[in-house]
Length: 405
Image 1 (cartoon, rainbow, N blue to C red):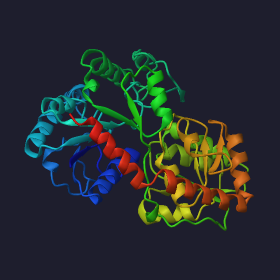
Image 2 (cartoon, rainbow, N blue to C red):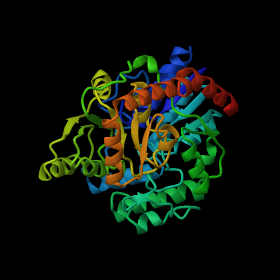
Image 3 (tube, rainbow, N blue to C red):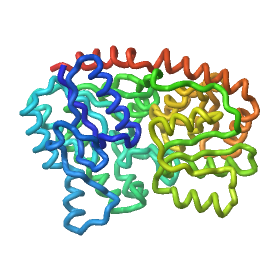
């Protein structure tokens, strides 16, 4: 089977990109022909068909007024993406296209081409963009469901997109155009959700299409578990952004005998560092961005991994990586996290945005090494049995077959 995997980022940037790349690796190992398609980027590895990729788009880079207008139009409907994907489809004629994240940098204009050439499509949903103008279902730092039933204008009224009326307006226009006028997502044959929470929440918000539950997988053979730790260190790794709850985590570390390693980059890094310095939180270290064996070693040398998210997480890869490493997770009781973090079995959960409750759970693990080791063993067994590549592959192929036109 010739499979095209689509994601706007095609290097290890975030869970959606990593999942896309790992899915391609798994399909190749099973004998399928896999082609990646997405956006050009200086961090991309060399891809065989990168000449067909869309141009690189960086929304954080200052541009001229005319360039901003062009970028805004492409968010709504990218003619470049449509043209390039058509050239690619005509040249390669794949059996199926597996979509991941393509909003904004690529846009759903590509869906018209798959329908035109009668190519079956499936989409793995990684966030709430199908029902929320600003992706995260967050407003003013708290979960928000005001867009329920297609009331996308709330994004503009609350300035949900980067606290900007203009950027929020573009996202509102995008949602009404795609969902109310073009109905463009109706051109996708099958939708996949990696978490039960995401699947149910999309239905609650008014998404009508059928969604199949298929959680992400992790190859535990790539992780050497370590169930013990001689220090009192916990580890956070991920994006340093508002929805991840890292400020709550810093407050939880105050007055604690535990140590915290923060691994990752993001827009809040300077503010987080400033808080640590001004409040003299000497038990917190920023290690920057790490990946591969470096990241695995930091996880293995920790007592536990902490996930203090304040948004509706989907199926966080950080949890799967921690479990594969034999480490329990202290996770916020929100979104899809409780589907993975079972209290007193694979970790502990706490009330989101509650530093006192989080501190209590951190100290509970720090002071109970035997409990940590047992939870770590439970966690490793949990991912081995439920999130292994073989189980994922068998169900994915059935989904591909069900989408066949």
